[in-house]
Amino acid sequence: MTHRNGSRATAAGPAHAPAPLAAPVPVVLAGARGHGRRHLENIRRLARAGRVELAGICETRPLTAGEFAGAPVPQDADFAALLERTGARLAVVSTPIPTHADFAVVAAAYGVHLLLEKPPAPSYALYERIEAACRSAGIACQIGFQSLGSHAVPAIRALVAGGAVGAVRGIGAAGAWVRDEAYFRRAPWTGRRRLGGVDVVDGVLTNPLAHAVATALALDGTVRSGEVDGIELELYRAHDIEADDTSGVRLTTARGTEIVAAVTLCAERAAEPYVMVHGSTGRITFWYKEDRVLLQRAGHGPEEITYRRTDLLDNLLDHLRDGRPLVAPVADGGAFMRVVEAVRTAPDPVPLPAAAWRAAPAPGPAGAAPPAARRVVPGIDALVAAGAERLALYSELGAPWAAGSSEVSHV
Image 1 (cartoon, helix red, strand yellow):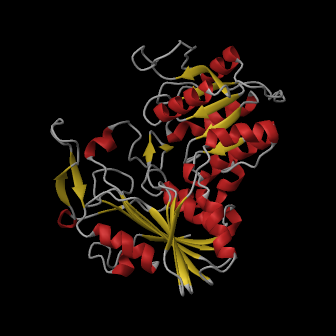
Image 2: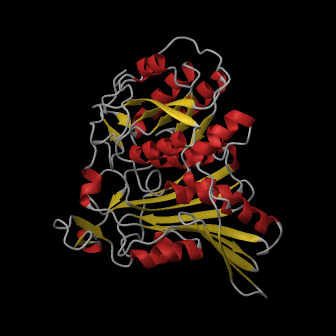
């Protein structure tokens, strides 16, 4: 099968049992441009440590010598052929969202373990297909939620379990990012809900700031689909795209926790995203990209600590070597995928009226090329923060462009 990025994840025969892994583990990278460059750098880091060997790259167009500094490796647009040719035992998949399921299923058929970028799939049905294929083949599959590798996650869970902030009232997540018009034009699937009749679901909640949602769910211990009781959505867009760029979601979990995420790509100023655990006697704020935690509780001064982080590919290798638990196993992606499915099946995002946003230059280094244009929603930074603080959606916070909206999906 040929995908829109040109690479092929060709159907293969019956899965064979994975052989015992010995270092260095041969690794194939599918998708080496864009975000895939980070994976390429990480694979090289692990190669220098003797843990892996870069066995091949799957890309539409082979990387040039300038893009690939190092000894050449096999390159092929046909993923299955590359796995067959290289004998890879592990694959990192960083291809467009609509292709994830096909790549994962082919890897499973070859008994190849996976690090699969988030979101793992654009629909719950495709997520189930991935999970079933991995389970049937007996392969390990890690979802690329880097924030879950932070040692702050178990530390916060321990604080909450120990009553550090009293009874949990709810969890808020805030993400205020800046993305310019060029960001939404970088690939045919970017900012799309569907492309050629195929689901993409590249909205702010499901891709750029998906970590805010996934991290909040993880802190609550809600990871499986059946642990989510209900979802409310407010999806808006200021940019001329199909998907949402300014959105809010409220989840009710089986344990009774209310989780609210307020996110945007139209911020006045870019800020570090965070998740906030609200307790009856205090709160915990976690800036998940920085691994930084602030504990505020009655009778104590504020306490701040920065934690270490376990790399997801390192963790996957440890899992394959000695059975160490995966940080973000595909089986624990069901709760997040409920959010993806809710976004996928929701009415199209509401376009904000022209009066609700203004054009602005994108920030950039001094002396660089003329800045690209972006769209800013005035007051959105404060609304995002208020959403996480008050566990409220934009319409409940009095945003004039959200007041009385009928585009709220109850799932």
